[in-house]
Length: 167
Picture (cartoon, rainbow, N blue to C red):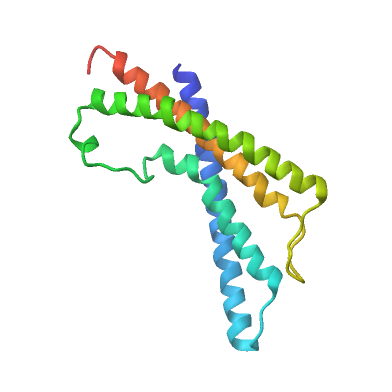
């Protein structure tokens, strides 16, 4: 079980490192856009769309990494007061009853959504916009797959805590 957890956590780390570069690229693109807009008094539609694509990719692909470090949104009213095993039970039940089913629904539906976009060669509806809108749509599928993998790791860690006789 520990090998599976380690592998899933490693995948999350590598994707997190990659997404940090996407964030850096996004900052550069926004900086260039601001300079062009305020110095030369115009902007490019494709540049604005690149900003949207990169932000969307960053948000979606980093969801598993964020979950790994428990920096996701959580209502902590009761959770913080629970013991380590109590938290593990909440994580186990929440992961198996809510996270896994929801990820499955989004992965399956977004796959068909992105695939149909790819099949018709969907591009930006804006003149001068970017081609290949399906790339961003496939990021939904990839992002939720990464979240699912990290969720499985989290569930397995919870199982270890629950069945650990020392805690």
